[in-house]
Image 1: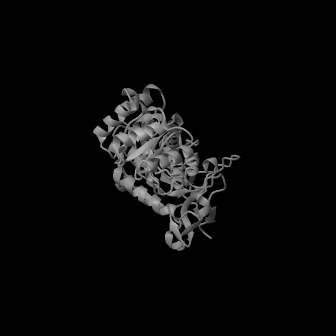
Image 2 (image 1 turned 90 degrees about the horizontal axis):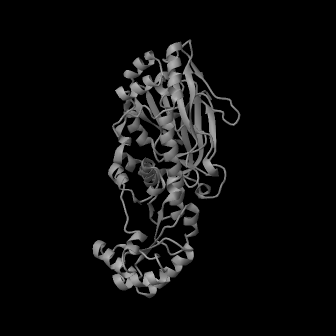
Image 3 (image 1 turned 30 degrees about the vertical axis):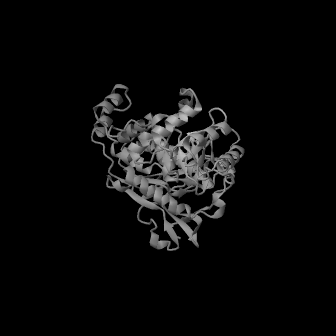
Length: 442
């Protein structure tokens, strides 16, 4: 995407910029932090996703003639601010959790250090990307845990806005889904695709047998036949009669899936199709997948639940100013004190303490400014969680594109192994590990 992303913002970000340029505070050095106060739905962990997408979008955060014209015509900002925006390029520093990393309440997921003028207008873009993608990734990770070693395919494009669907495919793949039905996700992110036929294919033909014969002629005997358009028992019988016992698979999309899967396995085995695999779909979520753990199911296809965050379509992340330079040049930690919406001032350094390879806490070390920020050497028994995404306005390209997706997928697979056993449960509870705050001077 090469078009400008500068209007992926809320208007008040520009009115704040306009006022800050007018009163002289626009050039104050600031630290903004993106974090979540709590995990949605009583979940035990969250997964960061969308960072690679965000980096690419920030590269294109610029003001061409069309963007400046809209701001001028609708009197969003003054002429002086338009002049400032003509030459806008982010020149600060961005750091944060790697894509695929686990997060917990208070984790400093993204830190943006720059002038107020440069950083304040990035709020909505950063939140819209990370809130959506992290919500999908968190739900998809829970599904992946429930599925165990059985393959998962994402097939929810028709249940989401078209661009959100592509982003959801990407997020699901990062946390363990093996394929998507979405061809744009394959083109853009290199994600493997899958898909054979829908019920319309069977209904198109004069008989189920005709549909199966045609599909096999077109796709080969390794294809997966959808056997529940009419009657499952008859469909399975027809499938094996047409394809033989080397049929690749059958798909079940309706009925009481544990019961139907067991009956289908028994029928396939009785017909000699002992290697024919069973894929189930039909409005699956993490709970339905877990309920099928003891059933003879070989693979799952998940649609609506994964692209909508399985009931929690946002990760509820916020973007807050946590430190700034005062008039004397010194650093001041600032925080919001509103009831139930408070924030913690100061720049944060984050570490995950480990014992025998399992996470025991999210350690967040807080300082007012830059000089006292803790380094990995100060916490030798923990894993540092933050990396640099941009320095001096130069973005690190290793986290972008298909290669960045594969990097995030590998990272997630590693760090998920750190979850304690209680973190793998699907029931609502406290976070799997506590978030512990420590002052940098301690």
